[in-house]
Structure formats: C-alpha cells, structure tokens
Image (cartoon, rainbow, N blue to C red; front, side, top):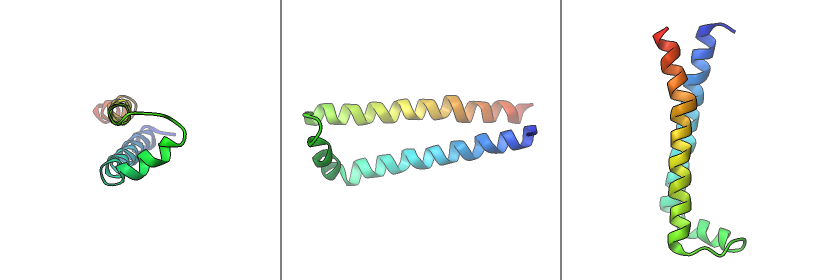
Length: 79
C-alpha cells in the first residue's frame, strides 16, 4: 500500500464513522422511547442514567473518530 491508499482509507473510515455517529444521534433523538423500552428489558436505568450513558458514549465515539481517523488523515495529507 502506498501513502495515497492509506490516506484514502483514513478519509473513508472517518466519513463512515461520522455517518454512524449521526445515525446514532438521530435514533436517539427520534426513537428515544423505543430504544429505552428495548433496554428496559435488560437494565434498570433511570431517565438521567440512560441519557448520560448515550451522550457519554457519543462523546467518546466522537473523540475516537477524531483521534484515530481524522488526525492520521490530516497528518498524511501534510506529508
């Protein structure tokens, strides 16, 4: 693999992960009650705990996308 292929890989990986993050956000906003009902079968979470877990998960996922996708892409573009 050459530098161009690796750069393209990081670009497409970053775009794909941001699409997943946006879908997660949209599902959380528009189908929150359905998701909560589904998880209620396995876990006994309050409304605040449920929201905090999802917002925290989205924040960690976004940081991971930036750290492992966007930063390597930008570093390779600067070469």
